[in-house]
Image (cartoon, rainbow, N blue to C red; front, side, top):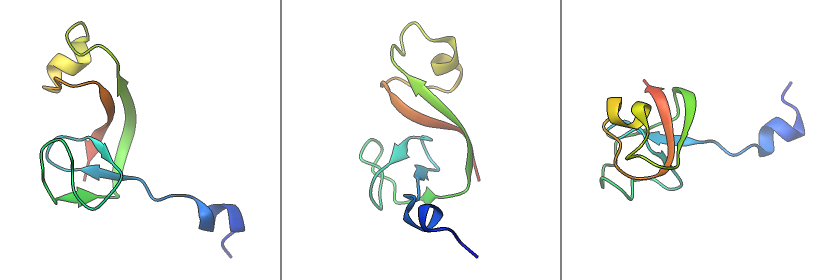
Length: 70
């Protein structure tokens, strides 16, 4: 049985191309429609020029990202 809170929880989608957390059916950053709901690891990049993680993931814009997208 699914609780009411779980049923109301928003399904978060992530772009498979750039790993950006997206609101709609396509990515506004790279324009890809290749969106997934199967992802792991939540990452917030504030200053991509100074972030070592952003450099390793090739992230150049601040925002919310997933570490792993399936």
